[in-house]
Image (tube, rainbow, N blue to C red):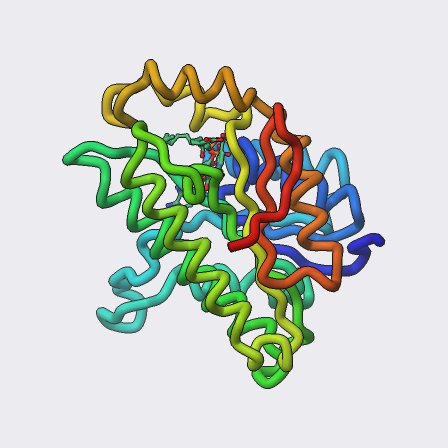
Length: 266
Ligand SMILES: NC(=O)C1=CN([C@@H]2O[C@H](COP(=O)(O)OP(=O)(O)OC[C@H]3O[C@@H](n4cnc5c(N)ncnc54)[C@H](O)[C@@H]3O)[C@@H](O)[C@H]2O)C=CC1
Ligand SMILES: CCCCC/C=C\C=C\C(=O)C/C=C\C/C=C\CCCC(=O)O
């Protein structure tokens, strides 16, 4: 099925998996709002997509998903919710909202990096889910839609390299699963699914040897050899299955290079 005329938001869209997710959505006819805190890379990716798909189907908004409330001096000092404004602006400019991919995520396990990992991977994803529900629920004026939260195989199978990262991914799996059990969501036309990839060839994985990223890098290399490394395009095809299949809600789709796709059940 195609996504022609649908509007999608993808966070962490400037590179890696997020960029591949935008590409598959655009290829299938959707309009896409790219969200990323890296403005330079976001603008570069936007220009690539405009060239490939035309100017009216894509936009970029700079936003840090971990830092939604910021002080603004506009009309007196007040607290503004930039994350909310970002989603609202995309819905307004592209003419609706049907698909939300909460993809922005980082690694970082050490004393000076672990809290940022929790803020981005957990709080950023929860807030993105809340905004998606708010803007897509039929009882709030939306047309229904689908949310896909990007977790990781590390949130399902324990590994010694990234306990904090694993905990954040496990948290968003259970957060998403819990919402999927609430009949209110289905009644209002919103589906929610989780994508749980193993390793893919992106900047995140290339940075894995950095000392502040993880523990036991030698063990990570062994795991990586066993499960293999996917292209972002392979992961994007799995993502699109969760978007496109109208019967899928509460699904957790695992994917690895050596074992392929498998729906996880408890
Ligand atoms: N690459 C892999 O092997 C796997 C990645 N994942 C998950 O997929 C998602 C994407 O990862 P990759 O593409 O590999 O990473 P990446 O590092 O290549 O790209 C991440 C993008 O997110 C953006 N970003 C990071 N923090 C942000 C924030 N606070 N606000 C807005 N944008 C932010 C970055 O600027 C970057 O453009 C992450 O959630 C990651 O945990 C899951 C399983 C495997
Ligand atoms: C593994 C922590 C690394 C910190 C973050 C950097 C990259 C993240 C990559 C992934 O999310 C890759 C996903 C899974 C790898 C970890 C364990 C999977 C175990 C697979 C198995 O046992 O079959």
